[in-house]
Image (cartoon, rainbow, N blue to C red):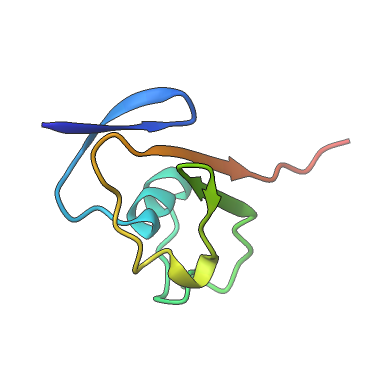
Length: 79
């Protein structure tokens, strides 16, 4: 099975995985094709694939390939 690197951790990669699939897995939120949460809530997520920012509008169309390096960053509120 192929693998990818997400935030410094090697993980298995299923065929046909998109950036949107990974964001859904990390956040637990279903996404629309434009990258917005189905429930209308804020995601507070940014994604870089091989050091290139992936625009939210392209998450569903961006396939993840074996050996890709991804950084998926989530905003956290706090004080």
